[in-house]
Length: 149
View 1: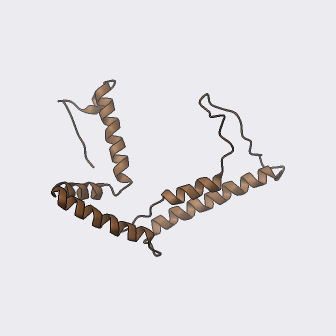
View 2: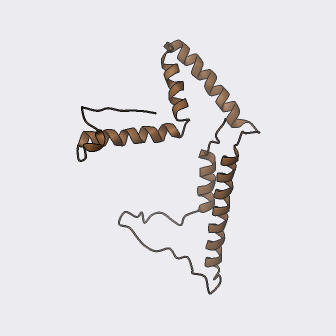
View 3: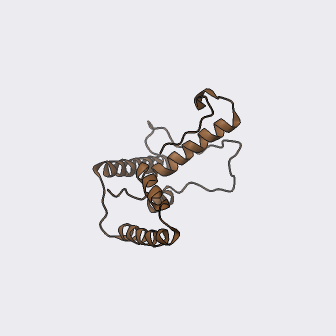
């Protein structure tokens, strides 16, 4: 995605300018948002969709959503080697962290450092309980949408 707005000068030279900084921040947010849903191809899709009349847009969106739901709910999913490597890394890291925390909680080895929860930060929420890694991981899996090529 390429968004550019300049008033006769390079935006990177306009440090300290409220509007320019806000515009650059918005550009980064949009780029990050679109990268999570297909990047340039998503922009191309939306460009093509915008060239349809409202009735055609409604029909096309209903069909696209139906296809996406079928892919999402299907038993077989497409997954690249890179996707699998990232998933394996995340699973191994999760297991290592959980194992270390269990070991530390049960006394563990004397030579290993113990994990300890400490108070910190002036914005901490005292109403929150301990972090449940299993629940956080389950919630992340629900949000995780594998890339379909």
